[in-house]
Length: 413
Image (cartoon, rainbow, N blue to C red; front, side, top):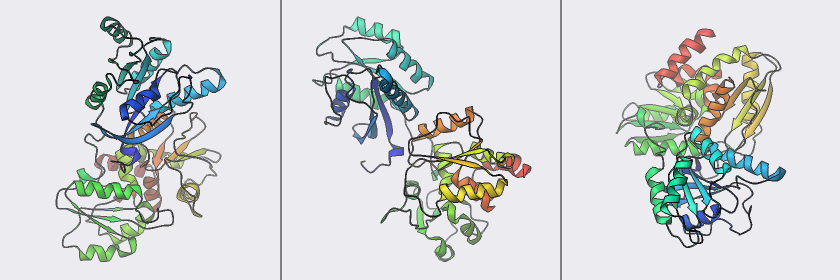
């Protein structure tokens, strides 16, 4: 459980006013001293994420946030950071101080959470010093339009019931979504082409490769891992034709040449575009490339931070290829990690990584934000395969994306 990737964990955001007991509630839920607590309002000044296993839910990320009633110039910035956490929140917990009750801040936050369609539960805390009568609890529930549970983070009263309620009402992050499992069947061979480059962590495969291997195994299929220069020998040694070949995007041209046409082929990044975001929209975005003009701004986004290599894909290769393909003198900006620009109107195009380090809700927020501003956003792997001239083959396993490519991208080229 402790090695579950961050992006695959249920993200539980804890919200409320200063001194409502948010940090104390986290400690009570986890039965650990994870968060710093103090009677001084405003102890938590920035969102703090804690990864752990929370029984009976499983692996989660608990996000402790600053008070939604913080004041002053710095306080306003902290409130902004707190509301930004809603972008990645899969399940929200609103903590209400039983001593002060419900105010406009709680009502406003509930409205925002409901607008984003985030599952939500309210917690009336500090009932050890200020008991809440059932009639009063019912009135507060009607006022906010959400379920409320009364607890004491100090003495543990109601905490077990709260944990069971969260487990019961928390969303199923996986649902019917699969990285590769819906493309294969039990007993199939899946060949995974995994170049080992300088950016790869020492002694480990990169996260997308690990996760695809896991999904193949969970599908009762067989994962065969090889490097690009051993692919032909690997294919020749198999006793039957593989159901699918998945490759790192930067080796897609060679892998496409070495893989017989009757064997379906795609890339790790394209799989993640479908799993975390919107593959069809990312393919459709390619039709905007030929409309780019000199001076247009392009946003390049990576969901993680890593040491840049001399010929880094996001910093060097993609900008060079996009300039060459569009014939325009483009300007580029880069964003990484949890940062994503609020004002997107200055951009005419965007390219995002596969998002393996982001949870699906955050990735979908980014897709929706660019869509709202009518900014075409594609994906690293889609862009690379397009530039290399093999995208038509790489998206063939996904009929709707292939149809959009044929009608809106290839038809305009």
